[in-house]
Image 1 (cartoon, helix red, strand yellow):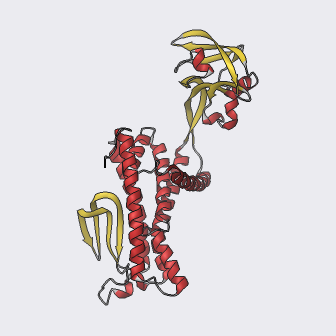
Image 2 (image 1 turned 45 degrees about the vertical axis):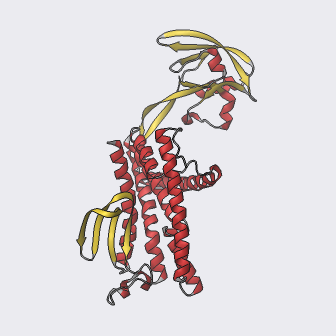
Image 3 (image 1 turned 120 degrees about the vertical axis):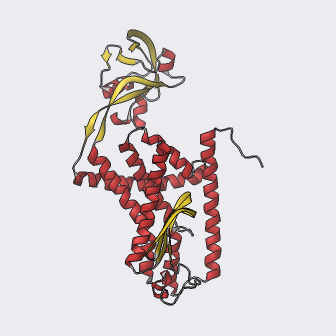
Length: 369
């Protein structure tokens, strides 16, 4: 069921993207022959007016077929004025870019809903969620589920910042940890290490300021956090947060692209991986899923605007080149560049697909030559 919801969510992003192309084409008087979610053969199709609407059996994307995307396409005389290549360049560019624009708009709507419905309020605790190997905490015998009640005479309580400060101020110091385990109170001796400050290996929840500086206050454990409530914000504030989220996520995606090239493609994912990841986030709550869906929508928008054929960005680039040159790129060059771009896209997809299979099946999966 979770996978079905994830597939429907991804289909929504594709539908909105193609809807942007379709509505723009119709607004500029272009003839839209087909509007499909998924690729042929068609599982379901119906012609309404001049447009055939359908759902393809290959759920890897979607497309809108506009008459005259290439000048060599033979069209009836009455259709030629409505062909893509017959329209002004600025109208073509808007029609092509409208798909990504709709994805960004959808992402912002999802972010606004996320902020307006109530953002979870998270409070840090001193309950141990995980223990790092070879740390002061592991040597002291701390276990997941233990609650640290005090360090020496300092009661931990919910003051994690004070707890961290105490550790930072006592490097290379033997301390006594008071913990509660299965209803019993235990006393464990531990030694704070030295890494420019106190080090027992505690990683604090992000909600209480985990950052590089927080390494001074590590204990070797990961503390749990709990939700104490939710905070809803009004529409205007939600819109501001949504804009901030969009800018932040866009920056993260471009940074991820750089890391992707540095890692040799190990982090690439295909639609299979996206669906698998999305299905897992659904378990965390629908508000988390909405935020992730918005993230994927922005990712889809940026990916489609890369200046490579057959992506939307490639078509925008060739329209700009035509505007600068005063004439379109010749057919042979266009087809060669399209072929190279398509092959690159296929290679990226295959790498992502193989990565997803390895993640799902296990690291032992390999294709033998």
